[in-house]
Image (tube, rainbow, N blue to C red; front, top):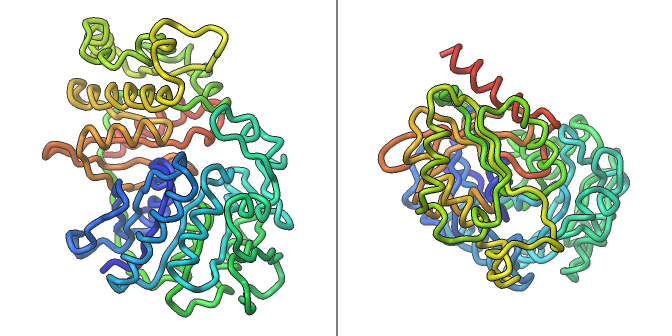
Length: 413
């Protein structure tokens, strides 16, 4: 029986939140779209994570999407809701929290920290590895820079709700007029304590990233079972649509160990017909060779001063969508034509395009390390192995670590 509805704004974030439940044996499914049919879920699904794809839409649209999704959940009898936000506070944070606040009519407890991945909230300020978020790499993001470091200031960019900071050691009790309570946390211990102190009378409205999701079983009456462990073939194909500096370093770090490594060309990124070309067929043959155990393909760094012909022909407003569409097409092609391979997708936009093309269902199963999820993809009557990673997560050698984890698990099987 479904107990919890999680509203996520992008797909890799939906995955790294969903796996917090799946790894404890709490059956979880991830769907794309803002109007899921709750009645068609398997009876043993306890958590539904819905990717609304609202990170890059206008704030008013994001607010209405979350509002209607939560209202549908309430009408279906659900009593526990979690608004999954980006751990670096990118996207429509204030607008989406306002949508939940309007729909639920009760204060929201917001815990944006993810200490395992270096995201902490200290006296209301969000930090990344000890650096205020607006001064970190996320403040320099070419598409969506974070302009404030205090969580309340980020919320107030898009919301008129009353925001109040609550520090560790204080009681997390809502007062008259409260809209959003920002609960600071710098360690997992802080998050665990909050999970036991938040008043749990449903309906309960919570928000945060994967960090606090791990502790939600302290608040929600789940039934835990044996966790699933999917089969993971040892051949690894990495497709990255992320331009985050952290991911770019990870790709570069894998160059020496990869059997096939490529920074995607102008045509590969911007030609909508590329995956139907002879050049892509040649790439697939190389990736599919038995001796090719690690293939890495990524979009590389954006350089506005050196645009190629295909990029110049693509309107500025459509470039992000075109690139993610091409990467999604490549990922789908790998799943269809490269046998016995584990596909790793970096970046939520690319993963979203893949699921749209494949018409697939996605089930998170286990966590390789924080922010990196092993999953089962139901596609064309088959189960395929998939690894997902948000662009800003992971150490410089994360690709090597993923390959090691996949190979170790194959040996265990």
